[in-house]
Amino acid sequence: MEVVVILLYVIASFVLFSYSCAQLSLLWNYWYKPKPRATSTASLSTLPLVTIQLPIYNERYVVERLLKAITTLNYPKNCLEIQVLDDSTDETHFLLEKLVAQYQSESFDIKYIRRSLRTGFKAGALAYGLQEAKGNLIAIFDADFVPRPDFLTQTLLYFQTPNVGVVQTRWGHLNQSYSLLTLLQAFGLDGHFTVEQGGRNAGGHFINFNGTAGIWRKDCIIDAGGWSADTLTEDLDLSYRAQLRGWEFVYLENIITPAELPATMPAFKSQQYRWMKGAAECARKNLSAVWQNKTLSVSTKIFATFHLLNSGVFVAVLLMSVLSLPLLFITTHSHEYHTLLGILRLFQLSIIVLVGFYATAHYSHKTFWQLLWQLPLFLAVVMGLSLHNAIAVVEGYLGRKTPFIRTPKWGIVEKQDNWTQKKYLLTSFNLLTILELLLCLYFIGGVVLGLYWAAPQLIVMYAMLAIGFGFVSFYSIKHSLV
Image (cartoon, rainbow, N blue to C red; front, side):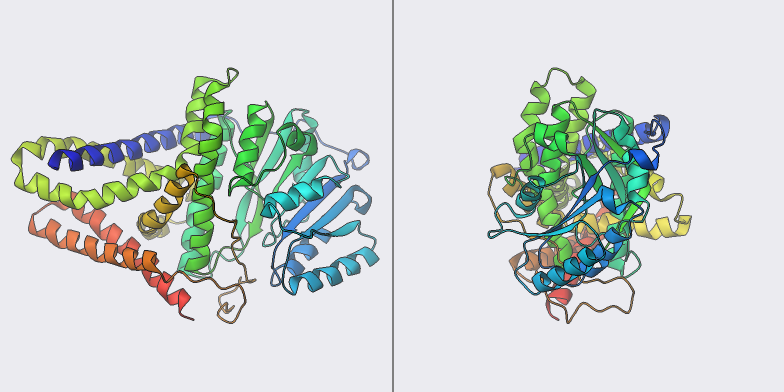
């Protein structure tokens, strides 16, 4: 049994160390490789017809804000088509009809499109609207996003290169300061939208359209096989199919499109479940095609592998965390394993990489003292989500299908805004939450044993795990009992 525990721990540690090496390579690309630039400027007379697709499902609290932002874009009305793709089953339906009629009276080419069945969820709605889209450039915004007036004039320039299929902008955050939960979400997303997307794009590797706040070339969507609902992350799936066909993606870090972050732990967990499971489903679907493609470099295939298998890191985090306590017992009471524990400490170098990764993402807008407490707390909460996310990943790898559940948004921006009386509230007080609470107690026990057995190399990790699982379980319960 000792050998099994050590072997599994080594495997999990190696996975995390390998992932850290990939992140280190992205850091290098981000700092030392050139960023994409527009080839020239466009005059007003050459502006193309753009179709804006707005997929909506039960979003009564944010659709008015969305349509106001879309109709104030700095772009000629005669070059703009707006599709409101409404699958709503509540009063959002009536609100949207009224808003669309209002903007139609103001001479906007805006269409209210409603399907009889919500087949294929968001992917189905986008595909349905694409059949009627007049523009060859398709901008997509989720209901909680608020594009800035110059969004189109800043992004369309890059489509002057014929092979560019997608231009993706960076997500901003409308409510980053609303709570500790939203602050930590923003902290993590900024890492993705800075070093990960920027590093992959600068290195000429595959990136992904993030589902919103970007523009597709219609020909690219069609050539790649169109939107598909067989994964929960239809955006990642189509991104890989398009890039495998040779289309180029451009990521623009300096163009920010703000959005609303989930304000409750159940809503955040729902989003995480969809993203983690969807990524695993996309790996199952597309990874073999990446390696069979003879036009791709080996480095691009390796980066794509880490990208598609990214969510699998949570399985390794959970496995290494749970096994670390038995490992502490083994190494404390079996002297022949002391050398092995010393070797395993090398994997803790991955923490240094993570510090560099997130320091890069935040160095320009956070102070040293903010990073000093936000980074450890963020990493602790990520660890605390490992059970929840690992379950989602395993389900994705095994091919277990579940419906698309969108993340509810309530127009929560200011600190005084309240979500407790809103519709669409989710709960996550269930068996999983109880297990997370038990893991919190488990790792508190690890701290005690670490102190008792004088094992300082693991005490910090146990403390972070206890804080992380405690944070996740506490807010899961608190936000479910309103």
